[in-house]
Length: 211
Image (cartoon, rainbow, N blue to C red; front, side):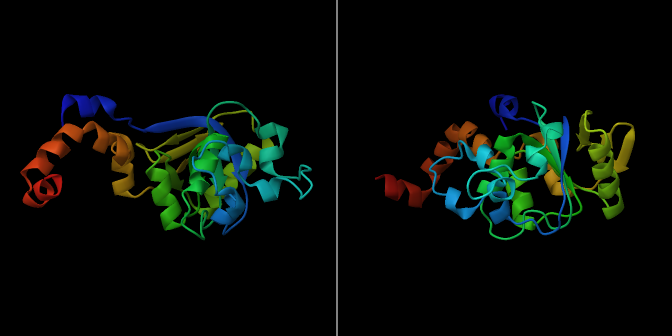
């Protein structure tokens, strides 16, 4: 890979941000971003619609939900703490996009749906897995005293909050992508466009199409 490509890489070794607990097993992508909001051409504005039906009544009145709780409204990066099978259901990329645009730059949970996990990694969002007991400890600690940052350390495979550090897991392949900055396949492809064109010019079937 050329020096130009190396400079374009964005490693994600550690995320520091205010945590927000999102309790509940099997929170699916339709709950994260209802299907009726998936008609937009771009992902702009999806952050305001994250968990819309769980956060607001049909007439737009706020409901009791962590995202509406003033204690979890700190500006800057946020870390979502979740339970089992988070992001299950349909494979819509809008779900991690909505969370990212709301401010979530990392997730810590008991388990994640495979496609949701893959979509997150492709956006540079680490999803670290902790035990059920440690997830409960983190959620309880955050709800008790939320005015502290949480550190999600991809390199060390740990999660730390207010003096509490727990071990975490992430698949080796995803961890390597995040640490090396190779998670952004589109960026790598665009930066390598001259090499792509050079290779395409040597292939007989691409020359035939070009001619």
